[in-house]
Amino acid sequence: MRYRLLLILWLLTDLLLFVSLYTLAYFLRVGWILSTDFPFDRFLFTTIITAPLWLLVLGTTRTFGLTRNQATIRNGAYIAYTALVGVALFTLAYYFRYITFFSRLLLLHALFYTFVGVWVWHILFQRFERWCLRLNPPTFPTLIIGTTREAAELIRSLNKNRNPLVPVAILDSQGNKENFIESVPIRGKLHKLEQVLAAENITHLIQCSDLEQSLNFLTACRKRRITYMLLPSTMGMVERDEWIDSVEGQPVTVVSPSLQWWHWFIR
Amino acid sequence: MLHSMQCFILAGGFATRLWPLTEKRAKPLLPLAGKPLITYLIEKIPKDLPITVSTNAVFKDAFEKWKKGMKRSVDILIEDTVQDDHKLGALGAVAQWIREKNIDDDVLLLTGDNYCGFSFEDFLHTFHGITLIAVYDIHKTDRAKLYGTVITNQNTVTGFEEKPIQPKTTLINTGASVLPSHILPILTEWAISHPDNIGGIFEELLRRKQHIECFRFSEPWFDIGSFDTYLEATTTLVGDNIISSGSISPDSKIEGSVVIGSHSQVIKSNLHNVVLFENCHITDCVLENCIIDDNSTLSHVDLTHKMIREGTILVPKGSPWET
Image: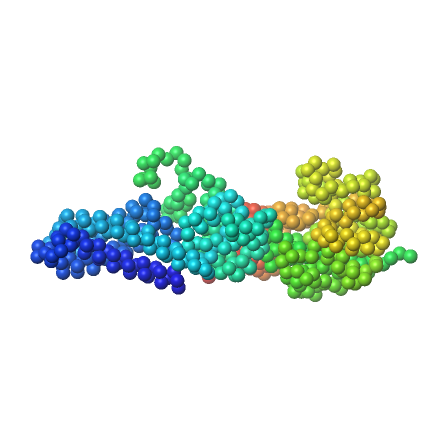
């Protein structure tokens, strides 16, 4: 419920922000008057009908994803792309409704303000959202499988960046002399899986070792509708150069060491 | 006058290395070639020997159910533990039983998760009031490192080494032993400070100048402690055969050692060295060196060297088995 409410709040504030930033662009460009060349009522009406469509496009970039980090260049690029689509949608909507084009320079202003404004807002809102989701008890308690160094690094990273996935327990097939890793308790070996999943109300499981058991973890997760994640290092991919692609509609994990930098655009 | 004898079988461990097969099942109750592992031991024990099986509270119901299927009387003794990190310890369990039941008989001590191929009649025939342990030649030094090895001078034990880095011998302690009544006080005393060190009691006996003799055998022996040893035990006992209580369609290809549990179905699949537990449905699969737990449904998948958890459903979308 906590997460759902925050998501609704985020979507509503984004809609409001889009309209507000376009309005700001209007007044900053036109001046603090109601221009007759560019009627504000028509402008506002078109902005309001464009906003939901813009939000839909923004949603397709998965920027509202639970674990998406807003403060990354990639996410910024998605928001910039969506801002551009917003301008295009506005232009089309205005033309279809009023059979005329709007001010190009004003729309450039709107483009810039929505890109910057929405990105900044997303970064700020994410901080608030993550604070809310990590409040005790956490909304997304996460079980870590494995006591490898990669597992420790993952836990450190999740906690440092205040990720909504909060590691609450660790299991390992081999057992471990330590009782904690990065302050997360090691609860024992794999035979405690069901017990821990139930006791901690686990919502996410991240597998960091014991690759041979992945099928069994998947079964357990499917039964309890838990999200299953696999760290690529479990499969030996440690260079962090893997990505997910699809081959004939089938998702695949890809590692292609021979790629040049510009292949990013055509892969 | 010969003392009478009682048998005590240790079955209290949580077998974490065989997860997920042992998630809800005690390792001694794991089916091996169609029969629970511990049943093989029970069937070999002379009929006039009272048997006590020691297990923990988590598996009480399972052992009570198993006991009903046995043709002879077995006492189930429940250790007061529910978690692996709080269990009584193997030696602690033996000592507790000796104290609580005032045992002053000779004791045939066995571990419930071992398959012993030798004759217990022969084993007991070799016992002459001196501590006797059954030893097995595992033949390979790198395998001997995983066990407690036994150093002998003909049939007299002269030393033990627990998981030695450089084994002096490939003879290993199988965990099957006969303890004469006169050493039981030593056992109960030593168990107080070493409740989990069942192998260490024999070293303690040597330290106290007690004689220990060994019984050597060449029949198969397995400590079913891992997926690989479970599979190895299955292929050794089953050979190139099928043991089936379920059904196999004529268009299936079966090779190696295959065990099909009751109410399991194999349809249009290739199986090689596979153990299916009960109520499994396998359709158009290629399985090699796999163990599939109860109530699993697999369709159009190829698996190699896997232990599959109870209730697993691996079915592509649109399949009639999809729920």
